[in-house]
Length: 93
Image (cartoon, rainbow, N blue to C red; front, side, top):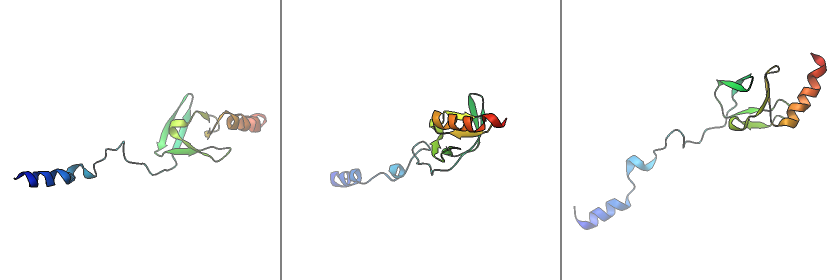
């Protein structure tokens, strides 16, 4: 191979590196997860990227989920939504 051919080959993208992405680099299509809420933890029953706040309907990415009710088995976007649901339901039990 002459110098010119080597230079042309260097400009071409390597086919085996073109569209190779590992599973961490692939963007996930947003989908709603089904979760079983436990004390201080939760179990993913159906994989997904988010859950919906039971009070506001806001999508909550799973890595940002901090508030939920074990008793009611529902997630909340923040402490305010959690307290609102608590006040709505405290007299019904």
